[in-house]
Image (cartoon, rainbow, N blue to C red):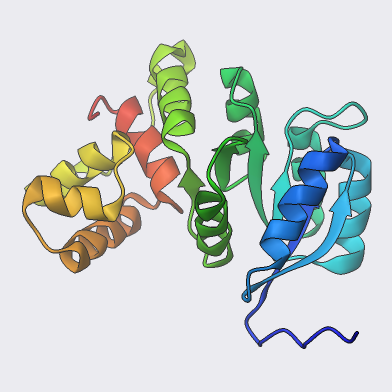
Length: 223
């Protein structure tokens, strides 16, 4: 049997997890999506680094805790060589240090392993388009850690004054982990208008994603 060719624009994904059954099952479910191609599976961080260099995937689903090389270090090594690769962490959210470490290493998203498959697919698509994606629980963990960490109160350049009153409202809602549709409903505006406001906020603050904007807002006391 010859596999049908994948359509152009297919998202090439590398799945990394040291639990064989979970990894194989996830890869199988993702591979059934017409716009996703699982190019390989890796059972550890070192293998992930090697396969990423060989296969140049668009998105990597990365387990955080692995015995040979943890997800944060693997992510750091991969992105140092291939900065265009998008890494989404997929693991059990049990320790907020794991979340902070892999995001600091450059991951653009973080999902709990019990995330429904549709959520995983949406995160992969968002990552491929350059957006960040955090599960609600991961967002809570990240922002709570920022609030508790004394280091976040160090002085930093502020561009808050560049935002309009409405944009500040949008930034506060971003810091609460709200998506565009939720922001639109909360402010009584259209989803398109909410999206435009979010884009404007990111541009004015010089933040690459809504995750970084949320952290910025918390550090400025706007959450």
